[in-house]
Length: 368
Image 1 (cartoon, rainbow, N blue to C red):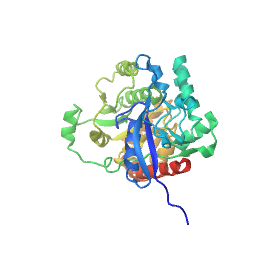
Image 2 (spheres, rainbow, N blue to C red):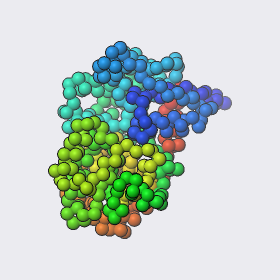
Image 3 (cartoon, helix red, strand yellow):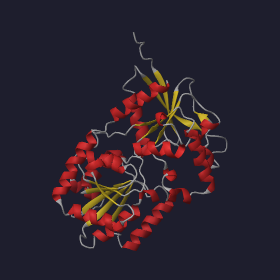
Image 4 (spheres, one colour):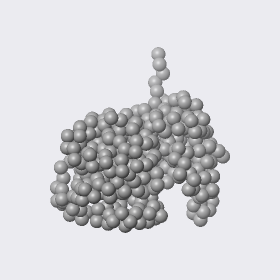
């Protein structure tokens, strides 16, 4: 007779507690909520890293934590991102798991080359901490293979678990478009492209802006909605300079952070969602757009082809003209847009947070 499964205690460690509207924050928030549905099997507590002395004065020290806040011996510690994992080098907790959302500069060298020497050292320590984990969870097979190849981690220690979509929240809507357009001062006669994310170089918003400028030469009522923070003042400055250089002042709407409840309205307002990133470890907005019934155009890079598969259209992220041509072709092909809308909706249906949570529980069982 098999012995009954014992209840596990799990600590979800948030290195920098985030709002659920950010990618990692949404992952932690939703994973905790889903795991709480199984109280007979797992008890979940959200916690943070313990900062070392002087971290409030020298922010770099925040990434070199001395432990986990109020850690309970025997609990499975689940680090929610790479940063903060360095503590496994000097204060390891067992058992320990980390989720890796992407490998950043390890697989996209321009980012690594732009980092200061101190930043590189901190990231290197965090990556070495990853190697001390009992198991790793990767958002995508693309990221899993990067961990195996770049950090020489045994394949059996790395598990691919895709993220999910909140299908009750992200669903096709028919909101009062006139009220929505008025609230955000949008043009009711415009055809909107949408991008959700920050403006860091890896996100490649520059190629999207250059493509938009080309598209507007023959379809001037095409506009871009860009939702989310810049990710840094320098990135916003670069974006605004390029917008000015391309003469797109009236065609690009930098909306910034919005309430989570309103994000589906932006998807609904878009005729096409465009994800131009050089690197995505998953690409959650792609699935959210699909779940909302929005056709999707992605860069053929990173994990995006894995997530979008045949339900999205693709372009070369290094070629603004290719991006522009794909946008123009789609906007002038109602039949193709409808094909992508239908295929995307079906694709997104297979990604659920319940499936993510159950697969994560399976990894906990392997170490607990």
